[in-house]
Every structure is written in C-alpha cells, then in structure tokens.
Image 1 (cartoon, helix red, strand yellow):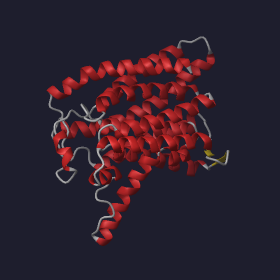
Image 2 (cartoon, one colour):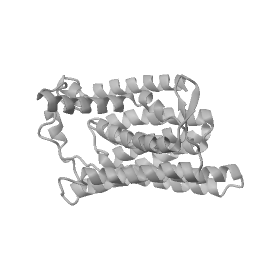
Image 3 (cartoon, one colour):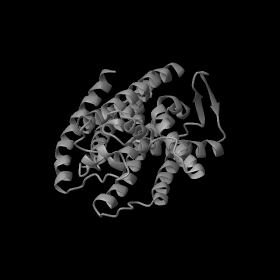
Image 4 (cartoon, one colour):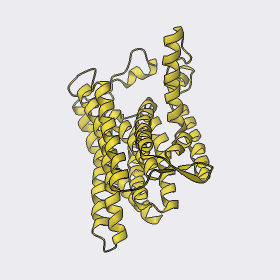
Length: 329
C-alpha cells in the first residue's frame, strides 16, 4: 500500500506541474469552452474557459507510464518484469481512447470545425481500440473469458464469440457514459476518481499489481486536475479527458474480470446515460420531455441545485455504490 501511495503522490505532483504549464498556453491560444445557448443560463459565463485539459492527463499518464515500465522492466524479478509487460496494454488502450477525444477537441477548438470528429468516425475509433485491446487480452495474454458475478462470489466462462463483443460493448458504453457525465465543474473528475479508487483497491485485494500501479497513477493525476476543475473551473477536460477516463475505468474492470461490477460502482454514469436515452426516446414518441434537460445533472441544475451540491451528492452516491461493490466481490 505504501508503494501505491508514493506512486499516487508522484503522479499528483507531475500532473500539477503540467497543469500549471498547459493551462496558460490554452488560455493564450484561446482554446476555450463553447457553451450551448439552450443549456442552463448559468453556463454562459463559462464561455471561453480553457478546455481540452485532458491533454494534461495524457502527458502525465505517459510520463508515469514510462517511469513505471522502466522501473519494473529493469527489475531482477521475473514477476516484476511480467508486471511491466502486462501494464503496457492497459496504458496504451487508455491513452488511445484519450487520443480519439483529442482529435475531436482539436478539430472543434483549434481548427474551428464546429462538428468536430463525426460521430460515426469517433465511434469507429473507439471500436478499433476496444477490439484491439480485447483481442490482445484473449489471444496474446490468454487471460481467459471468465467474468466475476457480483454477490454470487462465482465466475462464469463465456464463449469467446460472446466474450469479445460483450467486452467491446462494455468499453464503448463506459466511455460514452463518462463522457455524458462531464457536464458541470468537477463532476466527471470527482465521480470517476472514486470509481478508479474502488477498482484500484480491488486490484490491491487481488494482488493484480499492473492494475494497482496504473490506478494509483491515474488517481493522483485526477486529484491534481480536480484542483483546477472544481467550481468555478479554471479548465475543462473536454472529450480528451472524458474518453480517457471512461477508457481507463472499462479497461481496469475488464482486466480484473469485473465488467458487470460497473453497473454498481459506476451507477452515476449509468443513470446519466439512461436519462439521456429516456429523454430522447420519449421526446421522439410524444414530443414531451421526461426531464427538464438531459443528461440527469442538467435536470437537477434546472431544478435549482447549484453545481457544488450536484457534485457532492453524486460523489456521495458513487462512494456508497463503491462500498457496496467492494462487498459484492
């Protein structure tokens, strides 16, 4: 545990320093947030706030990843060298998801292409990364196709022709769910940090070192980013950050053989996604809205909740859900 805390502290320091460098650059280049006119009116004052801050996470994660890989790969212990090899696909898949978001943000904010990366191309990019990661796990790393069933304390082994599409679906759903959760200051970062902490604790319990060092790194990075992302935010993560975090959560859960656990511990992103689906489906059928605005956090905003209250309540719910999740394993 002490080693993981050191990794977390180092990652925090690296991300904090990078944020101090990157935020002024984004502000100077006027890479700022574009707010929707049909959104909550309180968001209009955020217009121009630096965004695409997920690049802070990518840079910090690559630095930490390089350090950890070197540290473990040069060890005399064969077990630690194996940790280094197993760490690489987790890192690369996560960064890959972030890069898809970066391309989208870059087109929107730097090239002034309001459409950004077309949804079908964005989904295709995410699909390619998810497929490569899943096939690598099953065909190269041979981790098996068994998944743990929460509360039942048992596993089921899926046929590979079901396992691969299932895990790909989990990755695509998770990245999009956390992307939807990123709508107010500090919400996605806070909720995701708690989920990452839960998965890291599970990694410690099961002694899966590659997950624990990766999780500890990303927790430290998220905490540093949160210092600048809390209300009133000095920077937003953009799709670069939200897709990276969604990728990290799904990759860790799949590697731990616990994708089903995400239904519990990621309850807030799940509810955000369901609210969006319900809103769109019901509106198309009836022309009426179920929520004042979707995703769910905007509904509560329009009900009069301030941003700090929403972040606090959603974070507490996530914390309780993660405690339930730990009981369930």
